[in-house]
Length: 387
Image (cartoon, rainbow, N blue to C red; front, top):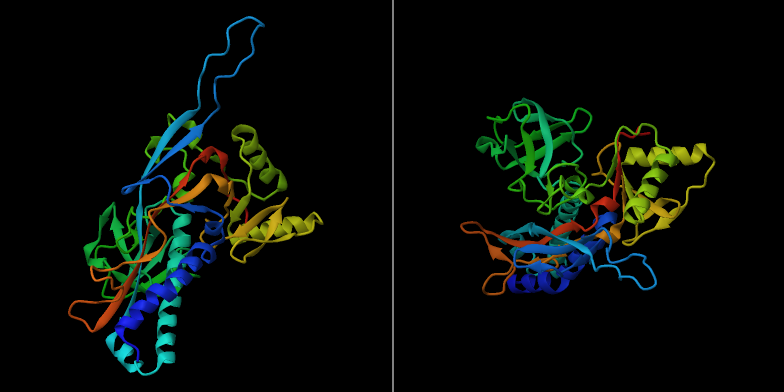
């Protein structure tokens, strides 16, 4: 017979390992290429020493002259707060009781919930990798009743629960709205509830409760101003990546120039290229025009993709339009307090009844943040004409 105890045990002993593996290696090809570690985590923060420049204790001299003065490596400390990542499932008491004498039906119920959780977590985790940590999905262009037209719908999908921010302040009357439908041609989304009072042009749509609380993604790393990991870019120029805008038609010269620049100035070797789907098509068109074979590679997690001079080129739905990132993934690490875990109560149970409701919930948690120790060793080409 199926009971809440057996369900609880199944979540901890059977499903957790599978879910962790799927989220760490199968959720996103870029994430699968990034090392994950519990090192450098101190309390609620990540504190990572980053080395820049070279050791200065080197020089030439005379046969009997003074030796070079010692001048060790240059270090700065990166500091960032661990981000709290959550995923919640919900099972009704009625569904559990209906399948208590049918193990197969209960397994199907749990499988469906787990698949939904993995899909949702993969979507949001992949999105955060390209974000700037703000949690902003899009900016409102216009509002009509319960529908809003956005500046882009790349980061939204049906089922998401969102909030709206107006100049950094939450619009209380429009909080916790669920996206019911997405029209990708008109960039319009329809939301649950009544009229979106207080939402106007220029407001920002965010994931519920996530404003300024998401991972430090590529959007935060590829900036030329402001601070990164607690350091000011204006006084730490090595925090600024190579950025080339208004590229136009993609060419091997533009790509190779960026690769050569990184190796020349930072000693960094690009081993991963990620771009939008339109840029990938433009690159394939370039290969075809130049009568060049399109080589295919297999990556960690079972992904297959094309390559440029032996470097995998991966298209990602969350990569900004007309953009290509050229990365050295050895410089990236997802620092975490622990891997994915179920949130447990004092009694050790994973499934908990929602107060006043005949439903049980379980929450998957991870406390982590992404750090790039050598931002100047990464490159971005933008304004590329897509195919």
